[in-house]
Length: 89
Ligand SMILES: [Zn+2]
Image (cartoon, rainbow, N blue to C red; front, side, top):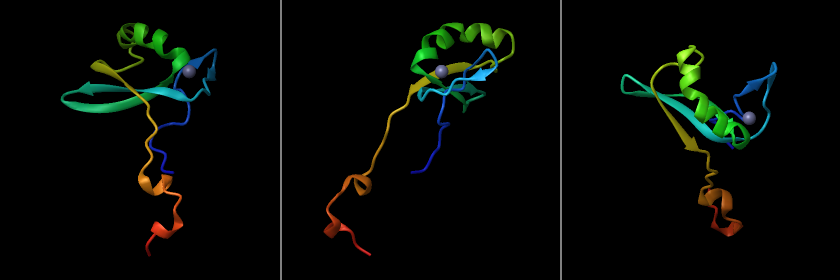
């Protein structure tokens, strides 16, 4: 499977990286362009969302419109199809 997002939460606390599975992708829109800046797990989501203004004020996160997008697993039919006769070469 192609990994396009980090495997763990981007939050660091007490000098340690959170190793939980991300629940949301954090992105910022600046000058009409959207940039992914990290991911957050369900445990840290509310505190990060509520503290995002402070993080922008102190320069830890760039200024801009912050969005949180829920991480969803997507599987295509080729991964789910267990009928071997349906494969063609
Ligand atoms: Zn976390």
